[in-house]
Length: 81
Image (cartoon, rainbow, N blue to C red; front, side, top):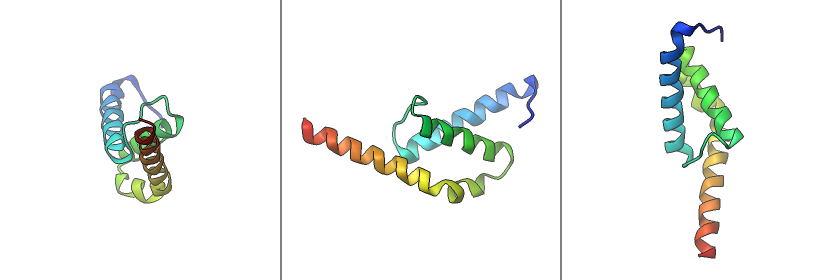
């Protein structure tokens, strides 16, 4: 993407919306998780290029992997308590 300073607010909004949407879909991840962070950037790129309708189809495997990883991690935590 070729970006200028004039787009900062728009990009912040897109990144924030992508972060919140993926947290809801995949689980309560932070940007410290590299896979989750990459998905946030990829979703933002799709939004920026007005192609969001293709994001989920193209990244469904990664979205599902993160979701399953979160659920399995939480169930492991529940069992140890």
